[in-house]
Image 1 (tube, helix red, strand yellow):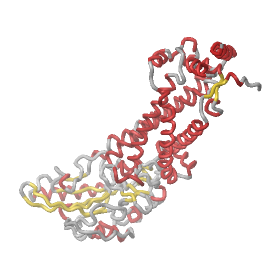
Image 2 (image 1 turned 90 degrees about the horizontal axis):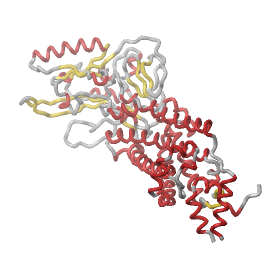
Image 3 (image 1 turned 60 degrees about the horizontal axis):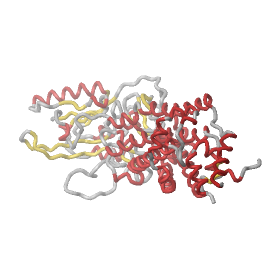
Amino acid sequence: MAEQQDNILDRYTPGARVNHWINAMLMICLALSGMSLFHPSLFFLSDLFGGGVWTRIIHPWMGVLAILSFLGLFIRFWRFNLWTADDTAWIKSVRHVVAGDEAKVPEAGKYNAGQKLVFWLMSMLTILLLMSGLAMWDSQLGHLTSIEQKRLAAVVHALSAVVLIAVVIVHIYAAIWIRGTIRGMTRGSVTGGWAWRHHRKWLREEVGKAK
Amino acid sequence: MSNLQSLDLRRRSATTTQPPSQRESIEVAKLIDVSRCIGCKACQAACLEWNDLREEVGVTVGVYDNPHDLTENTWTLMRFTEIDVDGRFEWLIRKDGCMHCADPGCLKACPAPGAIVQYKNGIVDFVSENCIGCGYCVKGCPFNIPRISAKDQKAYKCTLCSDRVAVGQAPACAKVCPTQAISFGTKTDMIAWADKRIADLRERGYKNAGLYNPAGVGGTHVMYVLKHADKPEIYASLPKDPKISPLVELWKGVTKPILLAGVGLAALAGFFHYVTHGPNEVQRADEEAAERARRDRAA
């Protein structure tokens, strides 16, 4: 396909892409192994990890890796996700976004308010999962918490995991629904038309920077 | 313990369908008459012997409790309390261990199918080969009984000698008790026997004597006759009204199906949004507008 090389924009560096996909793989493994211990009807998922005992052993270690990788993403992206007055206006017209009626939606910068919400929700839920997960990690840290604290941690861990899984579903679905998005995270670039359609303010900033 | 085919199941951990339960069985119970206990620890020794376990040699800290707590080897433990009750000094001795609740918190919390079972006779047993070592049973138990072995990360506790009971024998501790402070039989018989003992104790002035068979966990298959049943907590912190923690009920109760449905609905909502609103594709006009913006800048 004759690519219009002059009408594409860089969106993610190779480092950011590798970081994102490591995190994505870990999160999927964590969700599958975690859900296998959450509901009896999903226990069969533990076979993906070598059985119940292996699932119990590796889930927390994958969690540790996921925290480190998420920290990398957080450091890379937090400043682009600060909330502005435009974001409040965007959220108010979320109805039009869902309907695909983007002419009625305020222009978005590098990230729209929905993406920013996903970012901050993921950040907060990750912290909750880290804290509650450590409190439940009996084989390594069991002596540090009381039984009552472990009980609370179990509830917090299950609740925040389910909310996080729902947020991840929204995140993945949005990437599938909005065509041209996935190439940003696989090839690192997006087309000008994609940016015009979904992140017009960002496009203006980027072309303004261009030599 | 391993699963005993000679006993049918009432409940099986992390199992949503009915376990094998064709045969009817009589509910059994162990009755521990605290007023007859002399603290000889024969029950502790018999427990280690029958189950072929060894406790590490410990250190003394000036109390009779030995070892100091239940362990993965010590499934029953004499707990000693020196206390003034109504102006009279008393030496209370309670044989601690699994209470074999009718509504077992350990089984409710367990995520591994068949790692914890409740036999039809009421005995709650850990089937160690199915145990994944997560420690959820510890969080589920209202009596702080299960212990996780540092050696194999499996949970251990009193089996009520399910292997002996399956072949018509009394638990090792009951068999060995020299004062018959521990008796074993059907739950009905044990309650009837307890009533006689309580009447006797009341006649001797212990007006608050009573049976410990807490309703909060549906009753237990290990029961105590207590001289001071009005304040069980004086017997080395025996809980007055034990229940499965509300946090565990929340974690293992309604949240499970509701949260699972929530995740399923999120995925379905995405699918049907796609089916009704289609992909959001970049149009030729968008690309042209972007080109224009770029040219305007360059100009």
